Image 1 (tube, protein in one colour):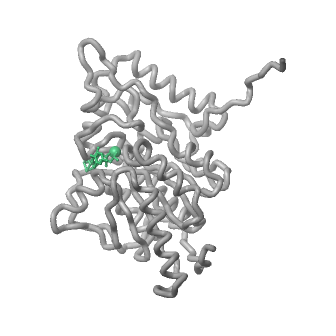
Image 2 (cartoon, rainbow, N blue to C red):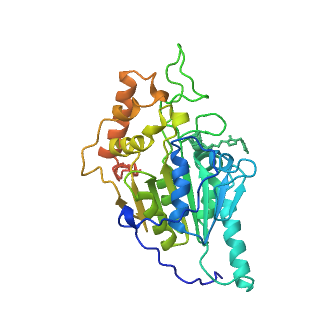
Image 3 (cartoon, rainbow, N blue to C red):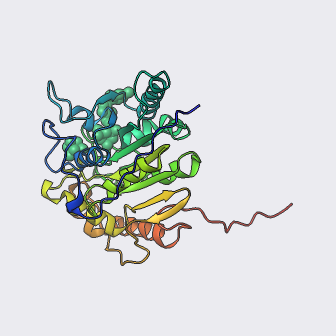
Length: 331
Ligand SMILES: Cc1ncc(C[n+]2csc(CCOP(=O)(O)OP(=O)(O)O)c2C)c(N)n1
Ligand code: SF4
Ligand SMILES: [Mg+2]
């Protein structure tokens, strides 16, 4: 039986001035200048507050945040193996529940948050995350997506944008495009298959302001197993000057290549609703990044076509591609 915990109200942050000043991820890290994944760390810790325990799968956000004898974490933090994000969160939540049931620690809501990178979550750890989202534990899994295995020098993952140059997919004279897979649609995949998971979101740390902070709060307030996928420009892997990180996040959202939404109890709520706004051409997003420098017009047109299809033809625009139009003939 699940231990009944006191309900904690997480207030919505309505303006930038209402953002808590306290930091729980602070100096002492060695992430690159302009690293948006580091912003994701800072923001989730800020939004969730001091009664939080984090587990982090191997990746940049483990390695760059735990250089020898230094760490930016103020909240308790534990490293877990690459691909073990889901099981580490379940283990942590189960341990806390057992300690509370036995009266060893007071009954209170302690936020259990796992962060895993795109390789760690969408590829290697997808099974463990699925198991965690099918549990009845209070936990939040954040897939921070810098679109590569960044820590090991930018290898392609299932989350890398079509056409991107990575160390696994270098453009050559014979094959201009080596990465020919379309990005995995991770958040809806988690929402569709896990009825126990009442909150799933796709978020961006810096555009629009407060988007991610409030999504973390909503996930924790709704409780149970929850999942957020973030969109994290990475100056090293995407090959651009660090000063453009926020701008690239904005261009990615405004071009529609990374839709922002929440799925709460099966209801889709667009948090930057591109059904009602004019999308900017995806070219403006692609041409600012060295990883796409080898693309020619027909490649950009193809990516634009795929993004248009997502928004104009999908059953749930930008979220899910299913249609119910298929007629199966009765024999
Ligand atoms: C089982 C296992 N395989 C490979 C590695 C080597 N490795 C360490 S970090 C990493 C990349 C992780 O990529 P991602 O999850 O996207 O996080 P990022 O580095 O991009 O932050 C790899 C392949 C490992 N630590 N463990
Ligand atoms: S390589 Fe990318 S994800 Fe890793 S620390 Fe640098 S900017 Fe951040
Ligand atoms: Mg990554």
